[in-house]
Length: 112
Length: 114
Image (cartoon, rainbow over all chains, first blue to last red; front, side):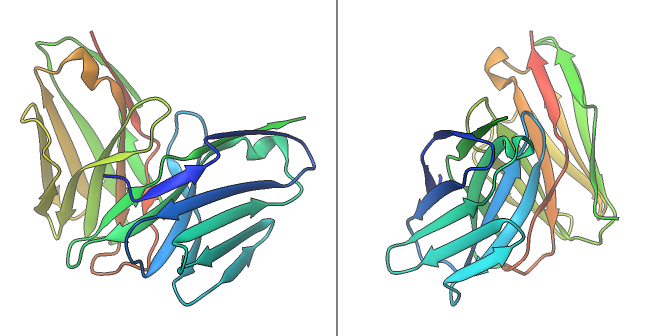
């Protein structure tokens, strides 16, 4: 089952613009992660935000977490064509043997 | 070395064939995973191995048979697959007993069943 639901499902922007993707989740979490997937390839971890954090930055990435609304957002600033990829939020569930469950993802296209 | 290596990258097999997907990591991770991903969908968990023992099987059909020969290797044996099993199969690993860590993914095996 999927824990997170991304919004929008697809996003197309011009190079240099900012891209914002949202994720909602259903159960309580200790942290939330964002992953990136280039077309048909493996996933790469981008950033992890803990439940006691509201905002976190990494380079051009800014992630927010609102545990009261069970939602997170990923902002990519000054986008580049190379940012074209699918972006997924993910959460760990289960104790003792953890499962990483992904949201539906947002497909971002950055037009040069 | 922070790589998860999957072989082969591409595989075409008939419905009567037997084949295996292989995954290797040398990060000392004791949790390893198989995911299946269909086009335009998120990865779906199939199996979790914890300290070389199968801990989670997400109701996967028996035509998929996982194996963890040692802490660095993970195999997925395929037999009598159906065309709808065509997908990207992803292997991942992470530190065991932690839910504040990232998972490392291989590049996947693109499987086509004909």
